[in-house]
Image (cartoon, rainbow over all chains, first blue to last red; front, side, top):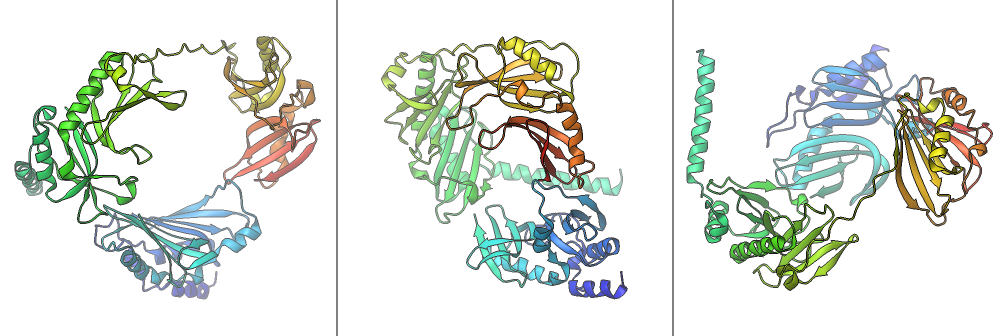
Length: 188
Length: 365
């Protein structure tokens, strides 16, 4: 792949973000999330699969491990998982579906990596804590996938960030669109 | 000893001392809580330290547990536990989303004397009627968030299906009893219960499942079932009228209409060692397809070849394995077809053959 393409993608990711530079281990209550180093992950990934990267689903867990499902551009009817655990990348891992989506459905479902504004994430996490009234809540998971939101901004079939948080007394989740607008707030 | 190890010991010692200091300040549960309900309540009150409502309270001689709601913050719930003779630990937060029912009483109204009386009454009823001695009673609502009160559940060693529930008002009055009967609850007269006139029903004799020992030969049913269907027919003693045949590597499952009553279906299982077992008998389902088919109505002899051939029918799944095979009437009670399910590392595929072994369809699921 041309170096310029990689550079463009990384620029889009916001190389300065580094998402806090791969803080290992679970976060302590009241501190920020131990963001995975997404820049490093995606740099390694692009070196292996090339551009474009079309995201079926992205999930980050409490410990900062990342599971990214992408459409295989050589076999666009297939989806592979790539895992990233504090610097170590593993993949492709075949994704198994109960009902395999058609190529057309996959083409529609995936999200072009360059359209994802990763630097918004820390602010979105702060917003989620504020909206839930849980300033010390910990991240359970952060996930991006196309879907529906029936919150106060009702949308269908659109990329949705879901930030799930918990505290000793409450669980909650806040949904955002790609622009970081809050779509829904749900607190137990 | 290295400096680092010494430091570890020092930290551990400090932590233990801190625990001891905390425990020394904590209220202690009475050694015999059922004989000292007021002391137990006082220990809980001191440990909690602020006004609360009680959502549930489990009470016995070995253990007591309270789920409380902060009266000043209705979204805050905590659990407290008491072990006889031990200091009460600080409360543990309980997530609001895990509290399904919020029926409650004020802590001041918690009547542990009533709980102790209810437990004594429950134990007397259990002894008089052949139930096991209950360990505790619990104050709270039922699973439908109704009927807040003290509740004892009685079970029996003699009958696993027996269950009797007694519920008292929070002040220990107005006991009501009901027993599990035919999948529902049936009222029981409390006076009769206390007089020992409501004995636990003996367990119904359970019929031993009909089984035929295996012949020791290991099978892979995907390679053929005709010999085992013949064995099963000999066991049933009549031609088999099939409703459904299920096949995987280690088990053959056969649903057959009973020859004496076509509205009943027996499910027979054949293990990979050849053992035959009558697993269950059910009524047929109205409006379901209840038209039997015979061994001659589907490609029984071809079955191993159809199974072996199935993966080649879906080219995008070259590494697929046969997961299972089923034979049943197609569509709306049509002819019996063979349905083969394939599996590879990415998903599933389905191959269908008709009653003569002709390919009907093959696709990724």
